[in-house]
Length: 161
Ligand code: S3P
Image (cartoon, rainbow, N blue to C red; front, side, top):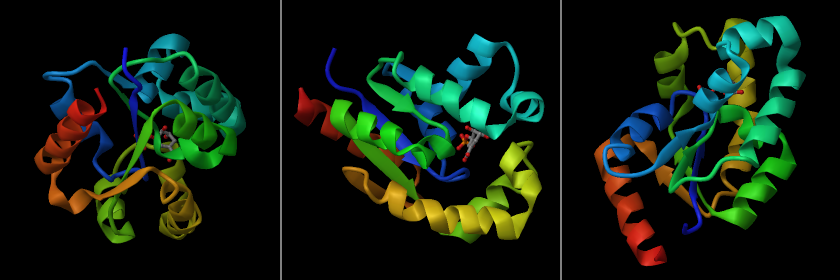
């Protein structure tokens, strides 16, 4: 199999919509879904029972076990420098980028555990992570929309063959 594309980006940048679009014609893995299947619980419950550090450790382990044309990651995968290094070394890393306010409007009513910490805290997280996402091979403006991004990814995939 060719090297995967890793899709990274903050919560609310549209990774899941992109996943749904890509998977109509490609092999796609969503790391959060792999996590929930593997641990038999949703991420919010896992956070509540075991804490964020335990989640990061499991997420780091799982990242090394998955392979597919496209691997969609949770927004916090970049929290561990070793994960970013792994993805940059093993595939093509594509970051989806959107302004904070747009992300916030999309996620504020979700059950994501970090969102419960409130807007200021999530904004600080966004600012802190932005330079990490920027280390991707390619940063895409997510306001272009899912279809345009998917088309560009298909093109890159063909080019990489
Ligand atoms: C997280 C993002 C979530 C999920 C978990 C932690 C984060 O994924 O992995 O709640 O730290 O940003 P999405 O980016 O798909 O919401």
